[in-house]
Image 1 (tube, rainbow, N blue to C red):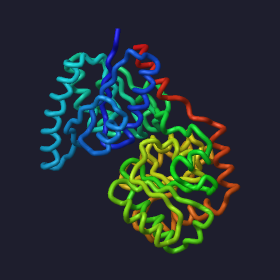
Image 2 (image 1 turned 180 degrees about the vertical axis):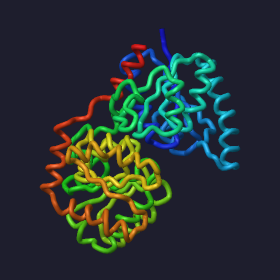
Image 3 (image 1 turned 30 degrees about the horizontal axis):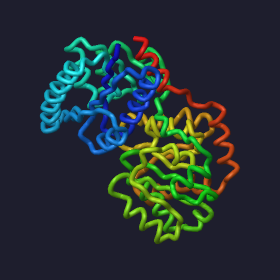
Image 4 (image 1 turned 90 degrees about the horizontal axis):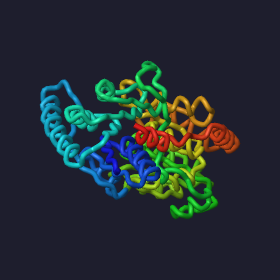
Length: 364
């Protein structure tokens, strides 16, 4: 008998990509399974889900706010989102909701509880955010992608970060570079702010290229800027005379990670997991506006293995060049260190968390 799972979450690729990874494994394990998605109205959600050719419905979820205007927007969106979710659950005869956390998932979970539909939460961050703590109290099962430092009993099991198959390199570095139109024989630096880009990281590398283009001699750069910054970044690399390929975003990150000798990246849980799974030495600059600093915690285990370095993103470009730029400079000039970092990551390969989660879902 066919079963239908509804994945609820969105607002960033960090929610969408793990959901797609689990959905892929569900169908691999049981081809009769159907999956549907409820996401935010943000472009990144609809772009990623449309590219994956899955069934999805955007809902007008909004983060909670204590400010009057924000609170009114939250309340209005909550009612509309919960109503849409309830209709989807009933019309599609959903067997289980898989909540990927965040403001999109919360009203869907509320609708699920009103209809008696089981819910499993996949927590992706340490510490869990407000929405996830609220969701966890209304779930049948809570799984976590990472260890939760301050709330060790929050989840019944730590399963690892679900990673899509297209985020894992399936060929040699030379082949991956050729696939992306890069020189197969040049060492490659990846710069990425994940699905939404990172303006401060873009500014950091642009300033370094302008000030010391010789640093990049013998390297090529694959720069994933996020929407809106690609023209500025492309001009910066061209003006500096640095060999660079610029895209706003890549759906199949496996080739990008496979091409890399070194990465500069945000430290979202998915980004950390993908860098580790592909054994890419990485300089992480966690998102600087999170009060709980959870991206620092995301990166900590990879740093502990010796495969990554974390620097604080201080936002202002000149200060970033002085701090994070100094570390990037050292890494680019020390090829033996990069080789040692890659070897350290290969000692502890990442588990297939998506398959583990999919099997747990099918067994319940």
